[in-house]
Length: 624
Ligand SMILES: Nc1nc2c(ncn2[C@@H]2O[C@H](COP(=O)(O)OP(=O)(O)OP(=O)(O)O)[C@@H](O)[C@H]2O)c(=O)[nH]1
Image (cartoon, rainbow, N blue to C red; front, side):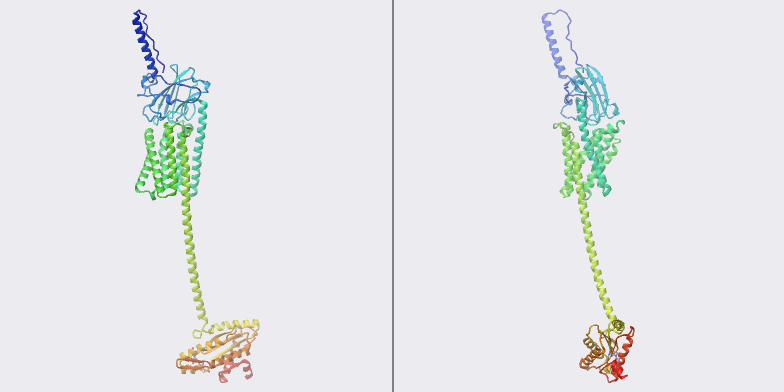
C-alpha cells in the first residue's frame, strides 16, 4: 500500500515568533506522531538476497468482508491488518476469503527468476497481485477451482513470477478463498531453487508411490494364487491410499483432472473416508474381530464401517468443508479403534497382532511428527515435511510383515491339521489292514479245518476214502514216472461183526479208533500214508517200497494188533487183523485200481487161510 505523504501546512502569514515556534513544534510533534503511527502499521519489508525467504512470519492478514474488492481492501484501515497470533502454518478453516500482504525489496533478475511460491496445492482460489510504486503491475488467478492452465507457471503448487519487477520495492497482495484448511507456506525464492526442491519431492513421491504400487501388485498376485479375501482388502487399501497420497501431492490436478475444476475436491472428499473404509475392513478381517472381539467391539467397528460407507457416498453431495472436518475426526477415531483392536489382540496372545499394533503405532507417531512440523510446534525439517509419507511406508511395511506372519501361521496350522489328518488316515489304514489280516487268517484257518474235515475220517482221523482215491492216483503216477515200486496193504479187522455184537457198537468204535492209532504208530516211513477204506477195513500206501519190505511192515502191524488189548470199563478185547500186500513198478499210469484189487485178493486169501496173517501177491501167484 502506498505510504501516505504528509505536508506541513504553511500559510505564509506573519505571526508572532512564539506562535510560529509553537506551530512548528506542534507540526513537528504531529509529523513525528504520524511517522511513528505509520511506522507502527508499515508493511513488513523483506530483503531478497537470492536465498529462500519464508514470507509467512512477515505476512499481514485481513479477512474479506462481504465480497470486498481489491480497491476496498487497499483502503482498509491499517489497524485492520494484523500478523498471525501464533506460529502455526495452518490458519484453520474459515468461511471468509483471507488477504495477506508483504513488501519485497531487492527483487532482481540477477538472483535468477525470483518467484513467490505458495507451497500447498489444494486452495480453491488464489489471487496474486504485484504492486510497484502504488501501481498494480501483475495479477494472476489460480486454484483448483480454475483450470490448471490459468496458472502462470505449470507446477503442482502455486508459483508466481516476479520477473516484471523493476523498482527497488514491490508489494504483494494475495487473496485465498478455500473451504479446506488455510495453509500458507509462502516463500520468496529463485525459480532454480524451487525447481531443485521440486525434483527432490518428485524423488520422494516417486519412491513412495512406487513402493505402494509394488506392494499392491505383490498382494494382488498373492490374492489370485491364494484367493484369501484379506489380500484383496489390503490391495484396495494400498491403492486407495496411494491415489489419495498422489492427489495430496497435487499430481491429480497437475496430470489428470487439471482441466476439470472442482474434481480435485471431489476426489479428496471421496477418498478420505474410502481409505479409512478399506483400512477398517482390512483390520477387521486381519484381526478376525468376529472371533475374539466383544459385542461392544463389534458394534463400534461395524458402526464405524457404516459411517465410512455413508461418508463415501455422501461425499458427492455434502459440502467439501464439512467432509474435511468430519473426515479428520473419523480418521482419528478409526486409527484409535485400530490401535485398540491391535492391543487387545496382543494382550489375548495373537502373535500377528503385535506387529500390527506396532505398525499402527508407528503410523500415529509419524502423523504426530508431521502435524507438529506442519503447525510449527517443532522446528521444520525436510524429514518432518515427509513424516506423513514415511509413517505411511513404515506402517505398510510392518503391516506387510504382520500379514505375511499371519499367513505363515495359518499355513502352519493348515499343514499341522493336514499332517494330523494324514496320521489319522495312516492309523486307520493300519487298523483296517490288521483287521483284514486277522479276518484272512481266521478264514484260512477255517478253510484248513474245512479241508481237513473233507479229507479225514471223522471217527479214526485217518484220511477218508475219497482223499485216498485222489492221492493214491498221484502216487501211482509218480511211481510210474520214477519207475519205483509202490506197495499197497489192505488191512481188515477179523470178526468185527461179532465184536460189535458181543461188546456193542460203541466199543466197536473204540476198537476202530485204537486200530487207526496202531496203524499210525507202525506206518512211519516217509511218503507212506494210511486211510480208512470202509467199515473196519484200512488201506496203507507205501511208495518206493518193495513187496517184501511191505510184508515185513504188515507183519509188524499184525503182531502189534495181536498184542494190544482194547479196554473200556470192564470190557477188554484183543483184535486180530488180516492183511493183503501187493506191489508193482507201474508199466503205465491209471492202473492203480488193479494194484488195489490184487491187494484185496491177498486179503481175501488171508481170511481164507484162517485170518490173523499177511498174504503177499507172490504167495497168491504161487497158490493160483
Ligand atoms: N462199531 C462199528 N461197526 C462197524 C462200523 N462200520 C462197519 N461196522 C461193522 O463191521 C462189521 C463188518 O462185518 P463183516 O463185513 O461181516 O466182517 P467180519 O464180521 O469182520 O468178518 P470177517 O471180515 O470175515 O472176519 C459189520 O457188522 C458192520 O456193521 C463202524 O463204523 N462202527
